[in-house]
Amino acid sequence: MSSKIYSKSSIVLLNLSGFDLIVTPEVENFIPEFWHTKKTDEWQYIILPRRSVSFLQVFKILSDNCSGKLCYSRIFFYELRDRPVDIVLEPIDTKSFIIYGSNPPFPRIVRRILANPKYSNTVMFIAKFNETKYDKYKKSVAIARRIFMELSPVTISKGLGRLLGVKLENIDGRMKVTLCVSREGIKSTETMGGVSVDIRSINQCL
Image 1 (cartoon, rainbow, N blue to C red):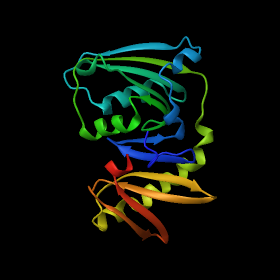
Image 2: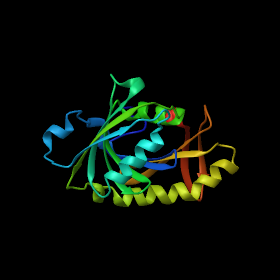
Image 3: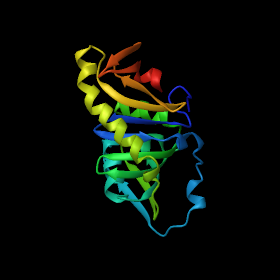
């Protein structure tokens, strides 16, 4: 995981395909065998026998089946059946997830989501656990959401492209804000709403 966007004191809120994905520093230390350390009888096996499965549909299913709980999912897309996707997450609401780990590394998953691929037959294993970790990040998530809502129209009006993400990093007790936008190649610092923010393209952020 690139230290440019993730650090021990940062969270990143990404708005992708209609979903908010809040990525925690824990994602750097994700262990694929996560579920071996947990005990649960709540396993589900879901088959999507379709010709056009998107990440949007996958996250909708995770939202429906993991509500209010820490959740592990292994996803097999037919076209990538020898390279499953592992995600450890917790739904905050119907369209928001806090991400604690992934395999492959989360930047690769983000790039797939942005490319909006369509897969055929998909199989999902889902395990739910009776625990939550969200309280640890609740305050930071609220701040990131407020910044996103306030500055999203500003980035468009300034010709910076669509706002895709907000990074918050605590440096010596001060909050550093980085905006991740859709416009390629941009790297600047601007004052918005009285706050100095770094502007980076989404690829530079990842």
